[in-house]
Image (cartoon, rainbow, N blue to C red; front, side, top):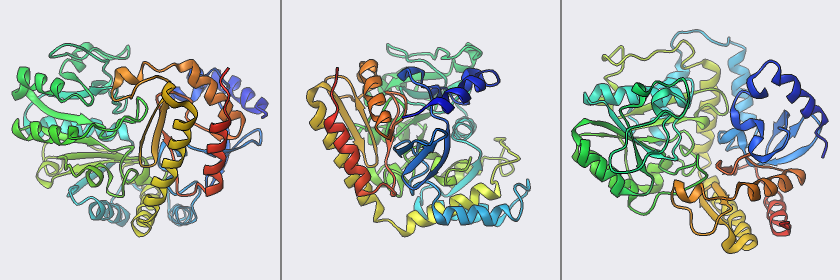
Length: 424
């Protein structure tokens, strides 16, 4: 496959954009390749500036669950654009989108639209602290909740762990109240509550971890979080920026039967446009300004183009619930092909249309297991798939996303390539 135009654009971009990209993983550094500069996408396919066609399993990191350039979303965006791009004022579309979310996820009784998943998490954390009158937050090692200062925290160890900044420019004082627990280890959470239970405002978790690769929750883990937070007057926040409307129409709560106090959303609710949201129990959300004293605002929040795309996307998903069974089946086919090809030399995790292959022996159930992966093996596999027309996330620690637009032919080709792969 050709990459000359992508290489030239990457070199030119590096002169004006840090690292040549506007989000770090796009630089392809962990896979030692030139990033593909994308020209267009439609359905299950994505096309780069060199004219190469790929079966796309990145799907814009999740929101393209219907496939790229879906007719209903394009029409909604076109119609919205004709009436103006942004007003900085309320629109009926905001109400329609909020009603749609509530109709699919009734536990989100009230929500506030924002512009990204990072902003949704940042706001939800502030709200949890304002509502409870407590300051400390528990997050899990390996779970990513955006790049706000309080969430950029490295892994800790021991009983009670005070956060250490994961980026320069983040003052230690900002993360001093962020504590680290181990994903899928309820004992690590219990120890933090034993040490500081009356100070903990919220526990935030990706109900299915998808930023250390896909790591599903162990049986009972999410319910145990619900129980311990309820006992201690602490809010439980599900970060469903990735899982919302993807692992089930109703997200993690539908799939696992656990209801959080607050939920953060993004990706799919804008159909690919920049958007995010946080919401939950009405009594908590009433703390948000102008109803309450927790301040949060945004000129572009509820943007009419993004909300139009979101309404079209969620309406289609609501009216085509059978696609989740198809997504499950296609995910299972790829999972089986990976297991057949790599056997015990790799671990394959999947939840619905999210999956990852970890190049490590033994089942991956936590951060330590994920980071034991052989990233050089992944890099070689990634290059093979890319060179054969399959576009995967350029990182061992990102998910594959399957869309409703992936055809049987797409899935079969992907499985054949996996089965034919020869490791050097």
